[in-house]
Length: 236
Image 1 (tube, rainbow, N blue to C red):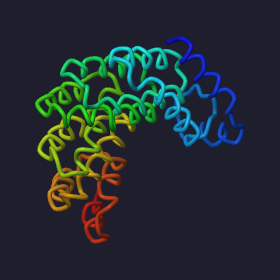
Image 2 (image 1 turned 120 degrees about the vertical axis):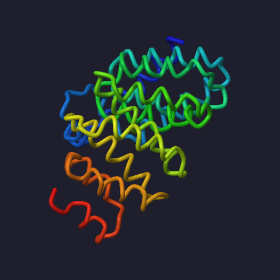
Image 3 (image 1 turned 90 degrees about the vertical axis):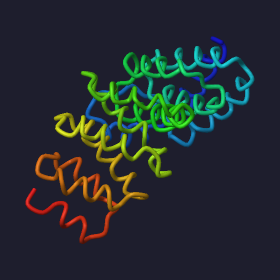
């Protein structure tokens, strides 16, 4: 296992790019640790090593993922985000507790949060829909990334029209949160929900526009027609 991790890190170091360094850092308020490798290159590296490890036991793959997370490097976290959804058909109900622990221990910026949650946790929720109740507990956490995770974990399912009632329940919990990372997360969720449920999301936004932070509101109505956006933003 250590040999694979070391080879991945060597490949990442060898593909460091100075131009990427300057463009990448500007997307984060938090300090982030990176090799400065282009996302497409990271994807190719992840794919290459996935071909080596895909037949390993799921728990061994997850151990490799945790070792990558421990480094704190964004690109190593992106490799995890590529690998874990590949074993969706091997998920078990108790895996959600592991994903939660990874968020609490290793996630420290929006990119690694979304990278893990969009597909890994999103796929899990689709596979075990009863577990969606756990996201409501995440939404009341004191941890900003777990709160964002409660919203962005539903991005992929909601694009398919699923779980709308839960979307509104989670947004209700997060509605007045002062953290812009949380606001952007649930605003994004409402935006994606509007693809299949424009009327319902529009009504929700209009009913809450007086208290919804403007950051979240602007995200939520981004895909709506101009007239709807104007009504949503009026007097707020």
